[in-house]
Image 1 (cartoon, rainbow, N blue to C red):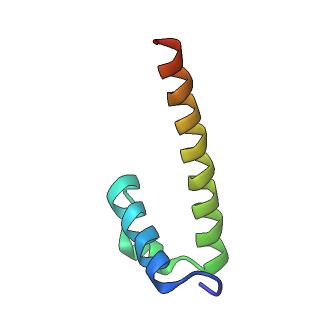
Image 2 (image 1 turned 45 degrees about the vertical axis):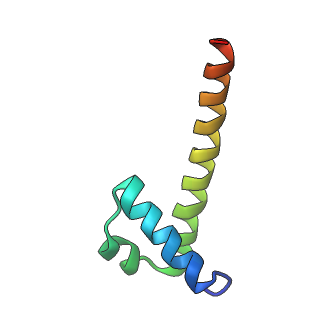
Length: 61
């Protein structure tokens, strides 16, 4: 959490728990670089999913 604000840390935890079915225990037991990797992978997946949905919506207009 060296470059992560405390507020952002809790917001990210909340999003990962509520929207992506991680448990707080799983998140808290991660070593810092492991958490960073999973957050990065999740951010990339969300970006790709948003692009896919936008393309699908554009197709139906």
